[in-house]
Length: 629
Image (cartoon, rainbow, N blue to C red; front, side):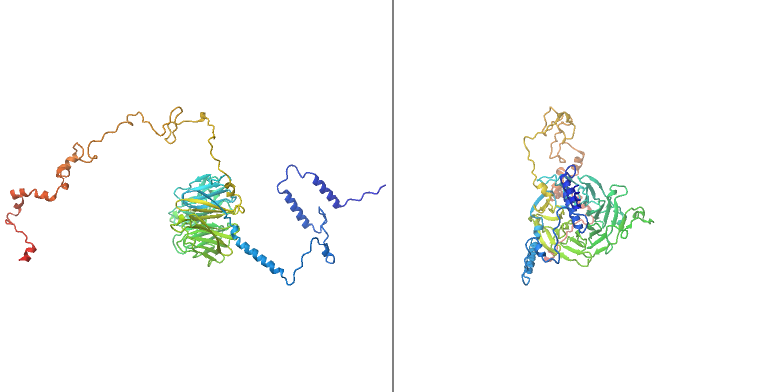
């Protein structure tokens, strides 16, 4: 009998299985995205970890590794040999010089990293744009202005005309100070000069507003909301149920969105800054740290105070067990807590009385920026708050919403600068960008009017500027065709459809309803009747069409000008107030001399009083005659 065939080895069986799998389909339908890449990565990991294992690897075998004792190890290396280093190591200094040149080139190309190659303006506001925010996906932008309005832009549906798809007025008569999207992007916060901030959904529909506190309660921890105009606000960067607001009443408050519109109120915590001396101060700016663990607030007494966002060691319950008189000052059922001891205080950060317009944390949470209305920007290390790391001056601003912030890679920080006073029409405002590592200004981009709010989106790599003055406002976007993605680039190339005379819309006349007795501005002509075109025919009403009475003859209807006689006219005429006897129209000398002849003929009217005491008149002699004598 013939000898049996040799048994197949494990490697040959694996090769046959691999060949069969290659010929058969891997599954029904298309390949899932990323499946091929994931399989290759898995095979690479298994090949790396399978050194010394008994399991055979698919594919060709590895080339033999040269041993240390093999004299021909150099000959087994594939490819040309590495060139020998020259004597004295002359190649190393050349490499160092090349590296230094590359570093210099990178330093000179700092401006290339900034997306400022192109600019687009989104106009529409009647006053300066004071607040803006862009959601985390970069598809919707909200802008607020001192004209009391908020505009919502959708980049996915917007065309080249740059028009918003919705405009709202949260509180008429109150300027917008702050806007902030939730982390999920389904809601946004609007903070105006009104004590009650509002919450809107993604499409601009109002969902509710926070409670208003009692202005007659002195202790702020016992009020269920702000009792003075709000100044700033921000949504928690991670928790979509927490919102932070600041107000001119001298407090910061955190709100729980789960209780928005509830009877008990949405207030969760009250933060009272530490006062250097008794009195009232204002908290003009506030912000969260990037991880949401810290809260910073700028106070008008010149200090910047940092509080933990939560924790039983810092917050105490606002309820009291025993209510002492006056009972209106305390409540035993307060469900919120309060904090009055900051974890870190930067005293004298700015001059007392000046507003701290904005504060911002770096990504690591150790560097803090503060912008003040005195024209300074200071960089702080919260671990050593005794003195600032750097102070930048001559950054003029007259708005209490001027923002500061960091770039997406945390290498730059920026702020806006107003135009010099009385020169805003010359376009002297600017966006100023600083280097975080070198602490120096690296770029200044001019803007027409004042530059108030600035935002650099991490996903789009586009810079949004809120500019304007008291006459007009606009949102300007800086971007780069190569380094920026989506956002404004989606709608810049979309053309607006021109109108055509051939456009036709079919209207069903049977479904139209006519209201002949509607208000004049909504009134439409009835079918079959000619329109009035603004000319209203008089009604056949004797009262409405009656000819007015002709005025009686006289001098403008003045008293005494009519032909009739009234009782008032008779009395005034007898008393010499009107007519010929009116003393105002007569000469007083003539009026007196008129009685001279009558006095000579009838002396008894004037001399009877002195007939017995002074029958002969004695006249007074003047001093001039005595001097002559």
